Image 1: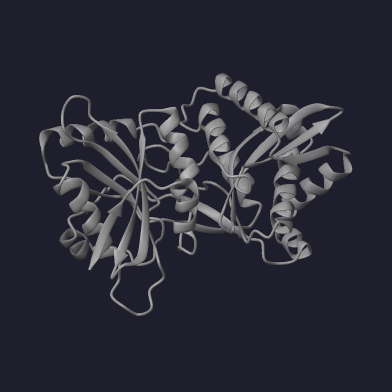
Image 2: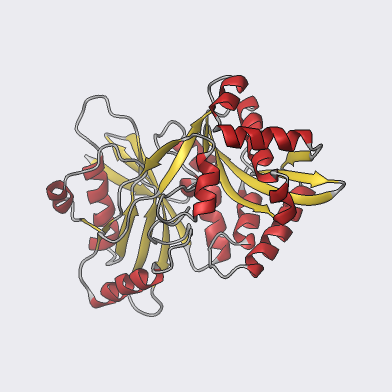
Length: 352
């Protein structure tokens, strides 16, 4: 019988609990949940699922309660994470029922879930029996992953020809690339990123404050890597790579016009690939790559790496129909209208 156990987890305890689970991702890490708690109206909530006292799943959710009245939003983004099954009954229906019991039936909250994997997705009838329904307007998160297990030569040869030529040209230009987790490099990235956001019209929850808190909350072996490209001491561009489990993930990048002219973005991402491989990471997630929702220039740039595309299932929801949670659902749907990458709450095609 699957049941939920909720308690306060330390960073070390939560990292240990996540070890070995399929579909591990940045949004289910302790550092991300803590960063969201420190930068906005969200509160991180964590629990494990037990089956005969054996841990079979974990879940981190972001909670936003309504002021003064009961209800609010429970947002499970790319969770829960489950143990691989050995031919037994699928865990997902039981785990989702337990989540619904805890949040919808007992606490009258509006629950929305974006599952971390397409494996084991339930048929609509089974989904309905678990107390959920699909959110028809919310397509699943799309990205691509690059397998780093091959040799450096194989990885280089796997780049699209034009992309590979851009890397070679940048290498011949004598550009300097620095990498690390040090404060000067990270601070310079945040300053450049903040200037870029100020010059653009789009809105994103991947703010400089969130990135600062995420770095601050990460353990020493999980801090984001900053790759900076310089020419004669001038910063031409920089990218930020998160790390969790066996995966690195492209989080954000800033490359100005001068950097684009000398292919700084290509060189930075190639150096990130090489360093992640040297550090023993198996995968690089390109951090969002949707044929419809990703801006065309960014999409084609990432496509040049020849990663393997994937798309997660569409979101599902559960609520008890009380008027407060109908209001929550309406507000969530209104907030989702701008289709630009955003990790926070549910929004179509948005990134982590």
